Length: 65
View 1 (cartoon, one colour):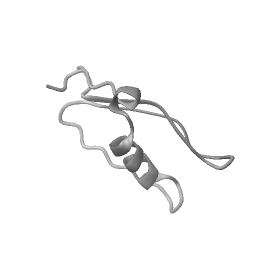
View 2 (cartoon, one colour):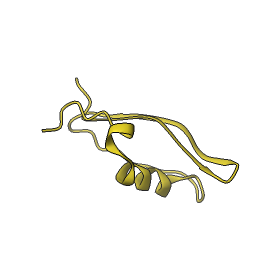
View 3 (cartoon, one colour):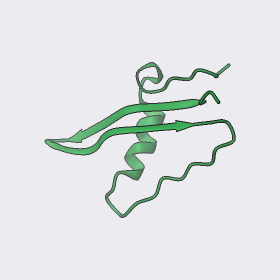
View 4 (spheres, one colour):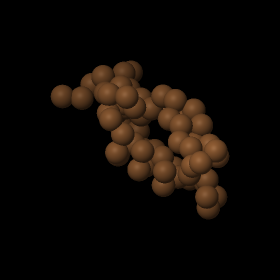
């Protein structure tokens, strides 16, 4: 199955601290994905980065029309 969304190597730093490091996720058609973790784990940052980054740099949208 060809993924609809591929996130590869998502990294985010605040000062010298890596909040996110090397996040990789594939989302296939029909998948339901949840982002879970303790407070301060970077859940919100993952969603914000997916929504605000240059899509060509972050997302391989192989099946988007």
